Length: 246
Image (spheres, rainbow, N blue to C red):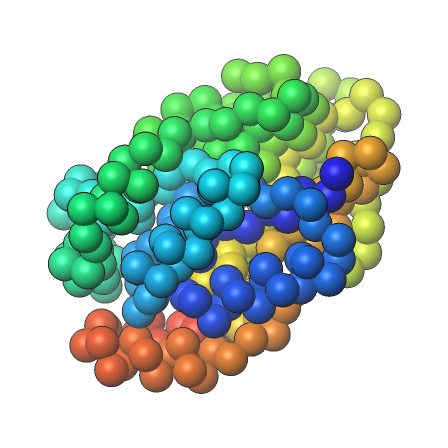
């Protein structure tokens, strides 16, 4: 089974559709969505409707901090732009969308795979994994062979070797074998708001049988997504981030 791992969609319908179409062409038979489904983007309701359809077909989903903010918590602790986007998103959601987000767990386990939005050690703290030390803390609370996370909006890979956790920088489109006795933590990147200087949407594809992980970047109509943000009255900075990938 090939599992498409998508994180940090942030209400960006154009990016989500592009990644789903790409994953289908790559043979994905299952999907995992790692939180921050809404927030920042102009299409939270449409994105949640699409994701609910995938959930009904067996997709795995977890909750992110921006999903939590859209439900009424956390926003006051966010920066101005994120806070304004959270308030706007709250106003768009109906009872069905709120119920769907509220039903999402913080962690999902599938065999020897673990799926979480932020760090698995204290998922509700929304800790970023931006270093080998932080990856080690997350990996230390589970015996999963591969942990999949998001939250930091760029793609990264960590592995344990010789009692230490090390970082490895993946190259998009190049399969990485996750075999042997090593344990891994893969950060899928952001579908809806990349921040690594590349405005193409990001996701990862894991082949369970071959134990191969491939990171992808997918160009999409970011100009339309940015225009929708402006038209919705959301902060203009959010539109610029889509255009620049920052």
